[in-house]
Image (cartoon, rainbow, N blue to C red; front, side, top):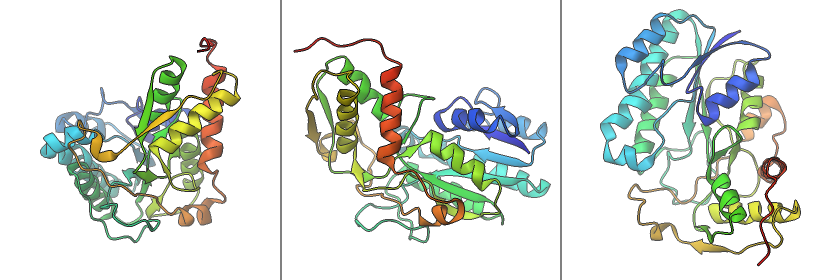
Length: 295
């Protein structure tokens, strides 16, 4: 298959390019060649494009930027995917669009299913919901909702904790916000498997397991670092409350654990997040030679 992938220098896009290149003809579309903020750039990329599948992980994901400029958020996260979906429908191209768990108010602790009623509480969430709706207007398209993505392609929250722990810095993380993370390695494998199906509509694509907070993930990371011998003792991680983070002026839902039963029924058992995160921390440990001094 010829597969076009936007955001090919980003965390998810780079993982997809790397994983799918051995089996498919990949057309990477980095922002420099396909800029969703510039309609002329997007149109130029589409005009010269021939593919069987169009995968779109590109998005404006900074919540504060979206809150400060909701029109830009709508242009990048809704209008651009909608334009791609129209282009794809006219050519019989299947579109796979990446979305988010931030489509709900987060007031319930019941795992979220694909049939949940959306109630986004931020400009980012509203723009991503509008993007989903634009893509799903065309039958056959697939939307994958992901959350708290981590992987070797680009630093994420778990990498910040890893690096700060290695440097001996004080550690802290929000303890009253819960979800399920998504490992890019697994996500790329899932998408590879989904390419062999006719799955459409919405799928929740996160690693299964017990809902975890950022604080819980941080504690997991430093425990694994200690077990690998990279830290001499396991440092404490201070608990923060979401409302204490003053530079967050966009509202964030507190509970966004997504049920991924539908995805597992389509492609088989999914790796639990503790297993995926332990493997990733070991990868980081094996790539690090510096041993910090003891207290």
